Image (cartoon, rainbow, N blue to C red; front, side, top):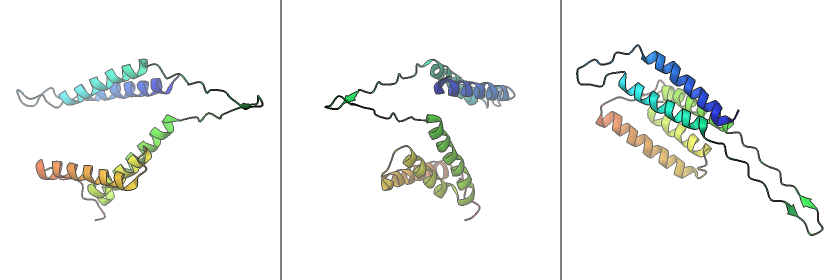
Length: 160
């Protein structure tokens, strides 16, 4: 079974499980408002649709490597590099979990900057200052959006 199909089945199992858990939520708490059940239902519906699409997407065919022949007729074999997307995804997930733990101990601002910088470096932003500046900018925007505009306090951290 291909990686896309495995991921799609895992996502569909998650959607079914989470959909079952959201059946206990009330339809609405106030007349005219969407209620607590609305947004999880929309998100789960979108996840289910995209999981089904992911399941039926055809995998890319491997490109054939051209044969290289030297002047004396000897063939040169090129080793194919195997990629493991699940390994990369698990590494990013581990960094995400480490970021959550970091936010708990050092606070939202420092934890998010470090976590985003590491994630950007892992996906290919090899220029460190650019990844750090982008992470700091995103963190600043999220901080002002939540803490200043909506007055929702963000975690301060246990150590500081």
